[in-house]
Length: 453
Image 1 (cartoon, rainbow, N blue to C red):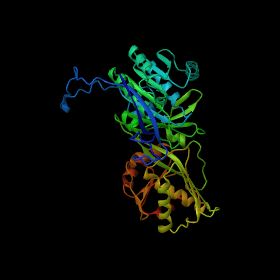
Image 2: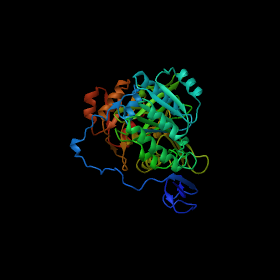
Image 3: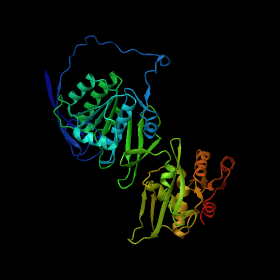
Image 4: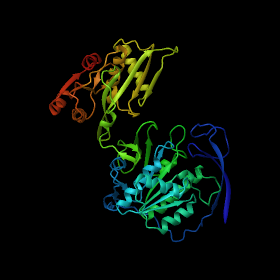
């Protein structure tokens, strides 16, 4: 027996409504309600041999089976917490052409080197295309099975009938279950396909890796519940005209979400970057105003990079505030502090801020470096080449301390910098551990005198 019914689902949030409307009652988005006809087999109402759920004392739960399997790609393992947990599900999103398929195919190749067979399911490419990519990347083909299908039931049969340790699906938006009449990529299909694959893989302790499309806003396409269903959500980002990519964890049930992985892209695919600070400083030019070296902590790793600012006369009437890789509201806040506390007349100026290389950093520890770059560009006076600037700026123009200052100063010294401008609090301890010139500052005016030539 089967039952058919029509439902109205929001493509943005996945909410089900009783009738169609132009605006979703839950998320407030317009023109996102679609009609879906659901045809699903009815389940038996009998209880059968169903057993009651049992509660287990927390201290007696055995965690020995929740082991991690390292992939061998250091940057990938760093982001996911040391390795992929058996039976877990990982969702990878990113812009088209950014390298999602390449990354997971390389991960599958690393698995085969460790005698872990993988199943690569593609709903978008032919087997010949996948083989050509693997040959170009130098990936060993033994141990990787390839299937090109979008049928959920066929994929489940392949998983059940094989001895794979990992299953990669490219992409989840292309899958379709026979039990539902809706098209691939709809809320119902995505939700049900992910749930079915998770059940199948978790029962055999198989790790499931899913590639997901993203919307024009940068969010993973499909219902928001998709991100709640999986264990790990990764975002692969970067500009196509740059030679590196950044992997971030937006959600991780097995580890931290503060780590990032950095890769360079070349003829042999994606290669992990062991020392990102050297990469981001490799194209640095000295003696130019508006440029400063700052230090950010991503997870447990300090990263030095170049921050650029340009202050120019407003030519279009309304002054522009453009920030690339930095929060634009935070930029407006820092400009207001400069105007109020330091008398820097930037209200009639265009201000452009760029984190060199396309990085995206939200940490307040780069505030002081940013205002130094703005003042440097405003007066056309460069920041000293041997100086790194670290510190958070308060609303009163005071310089506030930042966490792990010793780690930041150590990284700067390791890259050859001999002078570090830091908040007054913690400066003495940092100076004792590094042995270089550490300049403590408590006000913006002091920082400008210490950093600018």
